[in-house]
Length: 161
Image (cartoon, rainbow, N blue to C red; front, side, top):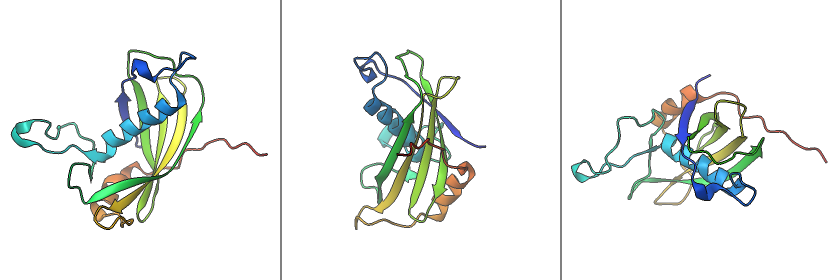
């Protein structure tokens, strides 16, 4: 089982009136981990904001200005397992690929602090050609970078009516 483990710092503003991380903010934390893990850092002149050496091996998408690929979030589903109270230490978001399609990937997540997960989730990310606005096929380089992180998709509980 090969997973990416991305530390994400909570913000005081993530809390809601109940004293734990708000459900919408939890999706933002997942987004931060996803961007960290899958998007290359743009190079900048004179090394300002240049790509860091600790970029993830899965960071193969160009998110900078003029990128030829954009992404579309086609679906997000999250299961909250227990409240996540504010803490100064980062939480760890584990990511893996639950499905590699032709033009999309399912990114799976678990949010941890070393114990039982606070949440599990999945997001379908579609690769889109920036010029035409239509989905594009995954490149061989992208597939090769993501293949080692392919495992069974996250299992979310379903309530039956």
